[in-house]
Image 1 (cartoon, helix red, strand yellow):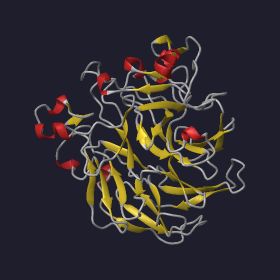
Image 2 (tube, one colour):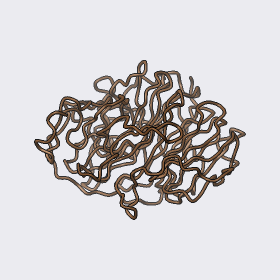
Image 3 (tube, rainbow, N blue to C red):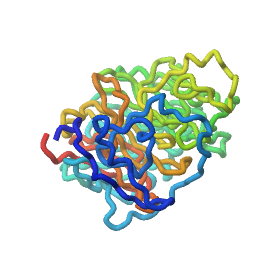
Image 4 (cartoon, rainbow, N blue to C red):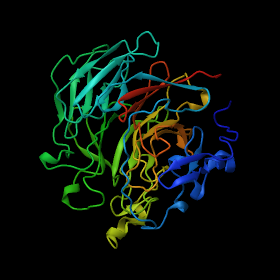
Length: 442
């Protein structure tokens, strides 16, 4: 089957149980418009999710502020029900790589194929190795401890022979001396950037705490994502926040690479164009369908609106009349996502196991909503690319983490491409790393 061409994806109706009773899923209409949900249908919720369903949300679909009340609908996390399993498109097999982890978040592949995982709540980084390629790690051990809510992981210098592994703490960037194959830190952590605005309330920080890391292809720039402290405040507590910061690899020469990005959780570099991309959590409190989360390439010096504007020059009513000079400077992102999906980690598929049509497409994890009356997210999405540019659509790739009652047993966070080309997905709801491999015809 050509992965870019989809027949009718589901039966005529998918009946699901939710808080409001039985509802008919709009996913059955995914075959319309060439298999893509558009307009209001694209806004949907978890009940419209299915492998292969595509959505395209545009500026035309933006709701009016306060069109619906602002909901507080935190997920109830439950144990994985018997028989529940993530679902991927036809031709893909989903297996449990490892489970029993403590809050697994970002997953990063070392040049030798080892997988490094930030266990953020446990303040440590773990390393997994599947040397024999059987889909199960024969090595599983802690690489480094005594960290501070670690998230981002990156290897430096860029290329096959790194000398350091960098870790993004919530309030700093540190690095450990490293050689390919190391399974324990061979030295103490060296602080590279010591004063990143913190996500730790105890030291005067708070708010968004994740700090992802990415090196430029030439290795000359270290990017660090720093989310806002608040939802939409614009006071001094937001200094050096809602930005992607840039540093030299030794932590010197700080500058702002891009600004007005409420929470740029995930960073990744397109393997062909070399452009930096980010996966962003937008603001809450304006209703079910505002403001869309997004995935976008990042323009150097670009301004993305927060907190005064959103999705281009749309003024946030909570800042009415402020900064009119910025209205025409706010950039419209490349791919708009269902609002409140909590888009987290991001990677580009640079393997060879998946069919050719997937090469250099993006994959992103949607951790799931709390500020929407009907849940969104709780899935991994694919973002199709043409010559390094997003088409504006996105596709459900890995779903099934929500029960028929609307409870949640899994929450995707990290995404990475394994050495053998499988897609690895961390799930901090069940403490699992899932392996998605292509087994159909190429």
